[in-house]
Length: 143
Image (cartoon, rainbow, N blue to C red; front, side, top):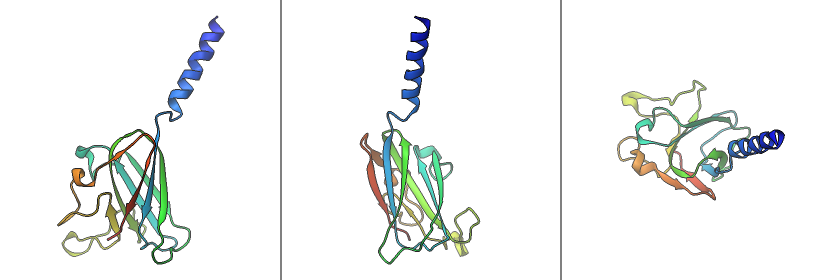
């Protein structure tokens, strides 16, 4: 009896930790990316952390240059269904942060789910989207 209970609890724990409630998010990012450059992506789950601390952060080095009009795909498979926003940039100089020029204007390609803001990044509410249980695809154009 004790062995059966332990087996059942182990199976339950495994099923809960294996992403049973995971909703896949597929991002397709615009064509201004060259081979060897790093694509930096942050997924945010709440307005208080927007552009400060991502819930999930991914750095992916692009292996081959993209042809004009081609998109680079990234997937996030461990998110729960809910409301999220995404920020992405191409780290051309490899320093791990979005490069800016005069007046703080970015000089590396960047983009957001939901498009861009008027003057600066969009608010969380403007960038946010619903991730349903069966997942979704989001296309992000780079500026």
